[in-house]
Length: 114
Image (cartoon, rainbow, N blue to C red):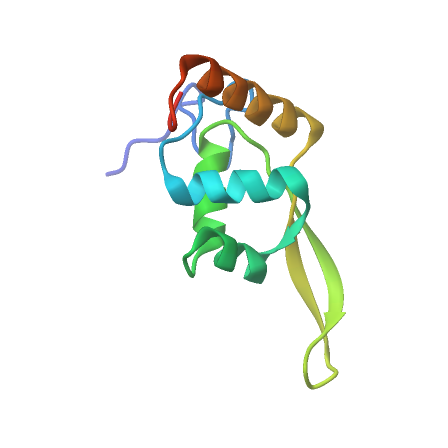
């Protein structure tokens, strides 16, 4: 029988949006740098990250304390059919957290991590 998750335990879906301590993962760093400059559709985020599963990266970054909302927009595909794609962006709070982490990283003289 599975143990029920207590309220104090944090999962990515619940989000711990109070802190972000940074990351050593180069894929995650590429995603964060790109999101600091603009909103990015999911398909393009795969290319930026250098992988084929950007939603998993976003899921993990959310678990680290970022919100990274995904807005759905309507576009037309190559067959001129209407479809909806996800576009990821950082909230103002996310931008502050990532900027603070980058500043701490720069002050420590480290290329990666916190």
